Length: 319
Image 1 (spheres, rainbow, N blue to C red):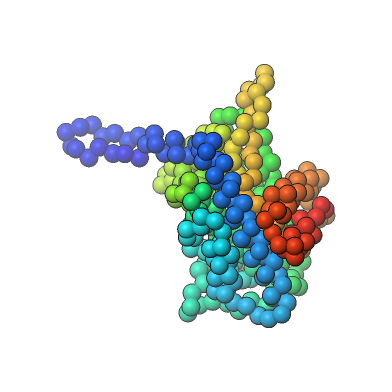
Image 2 (spheres, helix red, strand yellow):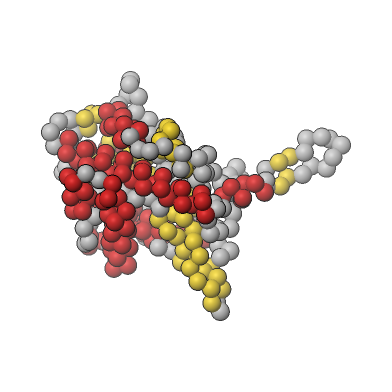
């Protein structure tokens, strides 16, 4: 918003036109951002493979785990720095949505329970933001139930088809629906716009169930906009789950009913199938997960060593 502060001139409050121009990525920005996500997906997949293998051999801690992920990103072409401070949260720490491990306060990670990691990178090609929740061993059934509910929420929004003119306010219920059906909710928005080698939180697009006066993120969704999709379940003192992909808004078709848009996921990294209670997935959700995992494998496999590639093939198998 811009405000004229000269008392001799009438007060003016308007959205800056450049904000919308930045939000709608051009073809070059889109192509570069997708490449950045491939680099990032390679890093995240190698990190997941290492974590799953290493936790069977010894205990880890939150700082070591997030440092290894940073190391994997630093090996990728054009990597600059994290796009925000990494959230690496084990079990009950994951119930705090903006938890930060420090040298004075961090948890030891064992071969049981769940680990939530929300992270991202700034690359010369673009900006990434991804969350994955990993099963590290034996977990209570309620952990897997909430893991699957959050996954259903993410997949429903990712698969949305909608008329042009909708905002994130219109679509947010697709993500919250599976949780609201069970009287659950997450006390935050479902997603935010992402800049191109700029702010990882950048409006005016977003997903939220209500308008907040201090946030300018309810713009009409347009092809070229990139928005995160990150529903979750957070149980204080116990555990937290979040799954996050970035979505590119794209044109689908135009007919007598209007102009329809949809989303293309541009985050490429596996969902941990060890956390999925398949019987809770509806047919369309299972198909959406299988399609997404096929995309992940096809996209990342050429960049991976044989052992990591074989692991990825298994963890992205069709359900």
